[in-house]
Length: 357
Image (cartoon, rainbow, N blue to C red; front, top):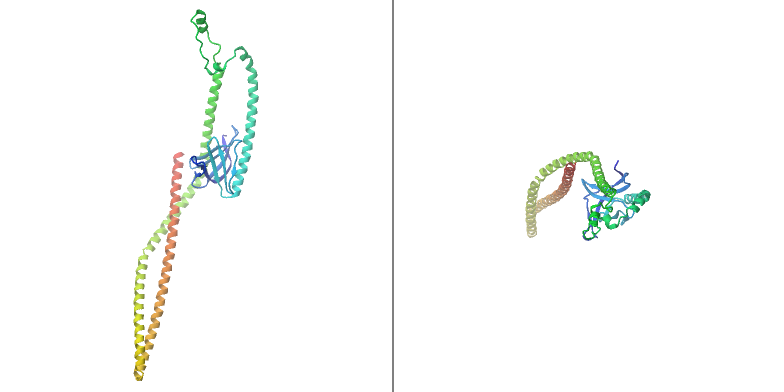
């Protein structure tokens, strides 16, 4: 059956900086799936994580490994085979606790599997050693002859030595030794091929499981992008009205300045009229006409003040509406930028996935 996933979670993946051995380097832009795999044929547990088609974690669990919690949501372990230290950042403490619990469980299982395999090797090696004793007594082999490094002895070319060299040597390697070394070599090649096949199988399983979800997300993102494009078009149309608002604001400012100038002139006229009233105490008719003019001027002044306050309120309301419009436009543009970035990233991921498939 090969390797099968037995536990999965999501986390942000980091690796220790190989230069400083202190700083963490993120290997994934976002949270990815981190899974425990078990190979029943070899009784091996591995931690595998893929970012698209790239394997960012491929760590075989050994009995001497230790998973350490360095904070409430972060844990790490060292892999001597990969010559690195992996770090995982989880979104909650419960996920970190569950991952650490599974790590300890599979580490103990790996230790038991290693002990069983060692016992089997000892039991299988004991009979073979007993069977090889008679052959060794008949033809003992020195370490130099086994390694093929026995030095040649220089002897005179007598007939006896020539005949001795003509006879086949009894110290050459037996055929079983070369065949066993070839078997070990092919077994190692087979294990490497099994590992590569398991990794590709895991990548294919995860990719096929996520393709449908990615298609749905892509369709939703496309609909959202179309809606946002329409909204941006509407906002651009609305933003074209800002020039009209600016021109209206300019006209209002000019009107306010004119009204202020007129108000100042009326105040000066009012003062002048007051002076005329004071100087014309003897002329009752002129006084009444001036008082009527004064009342008229005051009423006009009040009307101008009311109009001025109304214009100021309108200007303030238009300024507030303009600021609110700018804020909404800015937020919508930021949202559009985020969605476009996500669509670009998703398109690149799908392209890489299609190329790897």
